[in-house]
Amino acid sequence: MRWWMILPVLWGVVYAQTPLSSTPMLPASKLGLSVTQENGATTFRKAELSFTYVEGLGWTPPLEAGLPPPQGELLPVEVIRAVGLVAAPEAGVRYSADASRMRVVFDLPEGDAVQPAPSDLAPYPGSLELSVPYFVPGLEAVRPAGVGVEARYELQSTLLRLQAPPGRFYRYQTFLLSNPSRYVLDVYYLEPEREEALQPGFRYRELWAWTPEPVRMYWLEALPGRWRMEPVGRPGERRALPEMAPGALAILNGGYFDGRTGTPIGLWVREGVPLSFPFGRSALFWQGDSIYAARPQFSASVQLVDGRSIRVGVNLNRARYTVHTLPGPVGRAGENVHLVQGEQIIATYPAPYELPVGFWALTFPAEEPIARTGESLRLLVSLEPPANYALEAGPLLLQGGVNVFDPNAEPFRDRAPVEAVAAQSVVAWSQEGALFFIVTEPMRPEALARVLQGQGFWGAIRMDGGGSAQLWVQGRLRNPGNGLLGVRPVVSGLALYPRP
Image 1 (cartoon, rainbow, N blue to C red):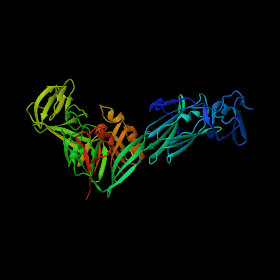
Image 2: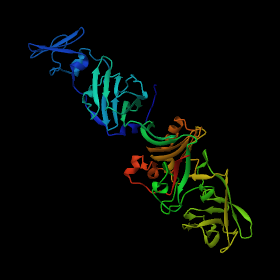
Image 3: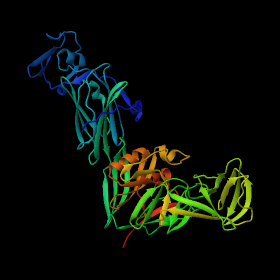
Image 4: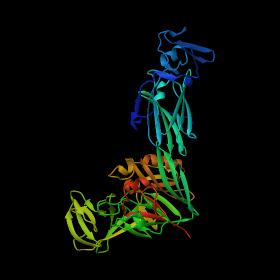
């Protein structure tokens, strides 16, 4: 498969690159030459080509005698060109390498019309041969640790051979940059993918996704009809995930929460009982084997002491009368705030007001009070369609197999969940009802949606990410990056159990 990519200049600074000066001397063997030395004369031969250097006299005709002399079996570049061993334009070269990737950058001659063919993340068996349509003598100085590099110089090209460390997962790609003109080779030699059968119907896998940079994915797969999922945790309390469900086969972190108070941000329904009210973003819904994700459709009202009901908005879904369930500033100038504990109004304040933990509030136009301090006020929320379980998170990534990621479709005041490069946590499912818990190394949600669609998932939603992204399987944290930062306590999780 071939591809064409024009990438911004930032590709040139992904790793620190080491400039290499053009090597003036090349081994004769890398040009296909044999060498004989006799009576002070050194003769180089290839097929019908033969040329000689005599000590004290210089090169013999047809070469100019004053060209630089050889050093044993090393030939000066000037002589190589003079005898016609190479005719390709010369390219400079730089490289960088680490434990999993080598990048070679060929600096192409300005105005040159030769166009190397880009390639798309092709597999190779650890040994790679690549023909570059340039003369690249600087490859003699490319000596990365752990990767064998060998060059052979031909008339119109340089043949590059690379040998990566054994026992790895191998991919390579090449692409062109237009300004300045560069040809880039990325050779990956990554930790192998792995798979582990846990018990019938469940398996754990570690895979590589390509964005196009490689990103490690850690996931648990549960076959249709074999899984049972429950939301675990308690509003207002942050705990390590394994403590929330010690008997679970696997547990994934849940939705967003206020870090200071542990208050859940968004809808949380357990066995039909709402533990937290909608915030206004996408949520995961499930009942038995049926699972889907969407923006919660709900109606809310407050019931007054005289039995009347008045429709209200909730949190970010504002209306003339709006209920607020999250601690923090609520209301706008010109509004008043009823502070409610349980079902009783205990105080009324001008907005904005700092809502404390353990209370909810109703904001309303100051000139239109609907109740008084001391009266009862009951909050009623109806979810459509009703579900036994729900947990709000977002953004929504896939719906009906279609990539629906839209960074502006859902209200995120903090843009990190929709824009930042961070560890991602995902619940995904197939059209047949298989369920997947997935955590990734740092990547962007936009790239994540593309990767999941490419994997053929029917639906997917992002859960809380960054330092909260955790996948525990059989009591072990499987995404090691977050383990290095310490296990972050969270407020909610999704526990997975085998179905009898």
